[in-house]
Image (cartoon, rainbow, N blue to C red):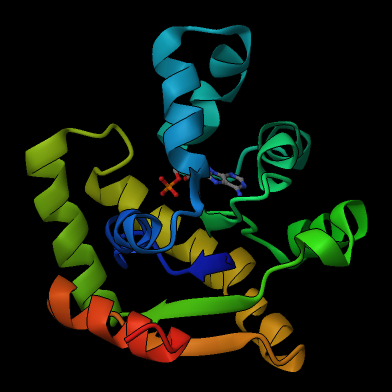
Amino acid sequence: MRLVLIGAPGSGKGTQGERLVAETGAQHIATGDLLRAEQQAGSKLGREVGGYLNSGSLVPDEVLFELVLPLVRSPAGYILDGFPRSVAQAERFAELTGPDTAPDRVLYLQVAKSELVARLLRRAGEQGRPDDTEAVIRHRLQVFDEQTSPLIDYYRQRDLLAVVDGGQQPDAVYRGLLGTLGLR
Ligand code: AMP
């Protein structure tokens, strides 16, 4: 199975992505996690992207394609969490990979903005991510609205989109996802 999860920061993509991986055996490709791992390892790539991560702006497309393309071709399929994050990335992804690697479904986890901010501030207390401060959270939500949310229509026009209510408790969201995918 090849799935794309779209959702604003704090919408639960990571949590739900991990559960879907356990259910489907597909590979979880969480681009934010991959980039943070590079940053923490102090690799050349990690040093290049640190400023973007800390400020909550999007990392240049070339970096993402370098990270993601070798992974998506796995026969196990994928759960893409955090990529694509713009229509330009989606278009280039489709061009570079072709129909055999295209997503089967795209799931949009819809959550009200007030709930997103509350969740991210809570996570800031728990995990101490440098991009979970209030100012950076606001910027990341703006980046989602401006650069990522046009993907919702992009995939709707291609008949791939399903919208799931991500504002509920994690178990209820997961049941919604499984129902949408016809897995339960
Ligand atoms: P996330 O963990 O998904 O919230 O991502 C954390 C940060 O990683 C984002 O704020 C961006 O700086 C960067 N990032 C993750 N995925 C992408 C992507 N597809 N394109 C550009 N930047 C990304």
